[in-house]
Length: 111
Length: 116
Image (tube, rainbow over all chains, first blue to last red; front, side, top):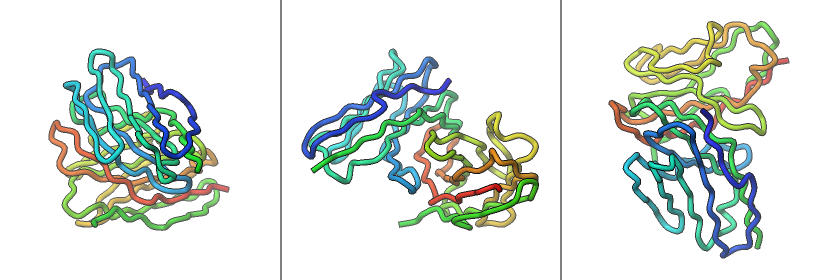
């Protein structure tokens, strides 16, 4: 039931792009993306609802492919502040709020 | 900007003792959640709460756990008899009215529980 994230870890130079994937074996109602820095709480990035939408703000965007039960997070022109662990939280039941998180993808942006 | 607050930030307790973790959700939010994160691992759902009732709970949330909204602002998680494996960071989160739609959940800073 736990979604699978890939890759497990990414190292980038400032300005480079990255894609983080989140795949589920279950039909998804929504996908929530969070970023967590070491020792801090997860910070909400965006939510995608079933229907295959794409969202974005600033240089971070995401897509949700309902047929494939997969979501991808796109980080473009990465900045040092993007470093952290990215988690996808998947919701299976309709609007239950119960999020099942993936194991996380650690992103390190170097100068 | 409104935020979820949690107290204490760190709690050390002996095995077998009861602990109560406290949270103040964002004021206009009506759905509340507890998650936990064992050091270095993923975030795990424990329970969701709405209208003074548990909406969903995970297998982790057994009879040793309980939640309560004792007044109009606080939301608590009680662990009756703590075990070593309960050591983790516990996050409270809240969201606007759910009602069949998904809303973003805002996490508090967490309470680090250490059971010795």
